[in-house]
Image (cartoon, rainbow, N blue to C red; front, side, top):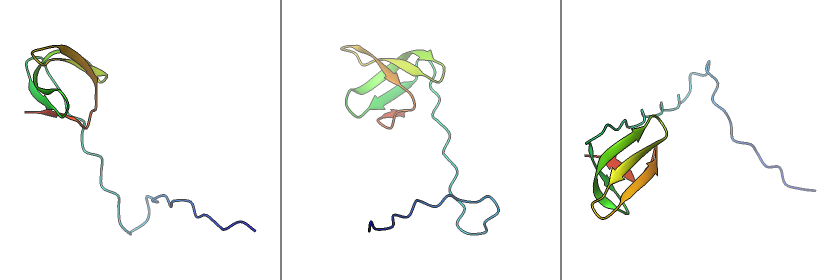
Length: 75
């Protein structure tokens, strides 16, 4: 006999209990924004692909980073 494995419960819209927190809005980048990356350091946005990726010049190289990225922060 196998043990019962409960599935995670989903939140019902009509439930008065513990409403889940809304998702924070995704960060928007524009050309010439200053950014920092956990691995690559400080850089400047040189190009933006709407909702897909950003091109960033880190001085020694240019990197294309998919968005949203937890490691990328706008300064």
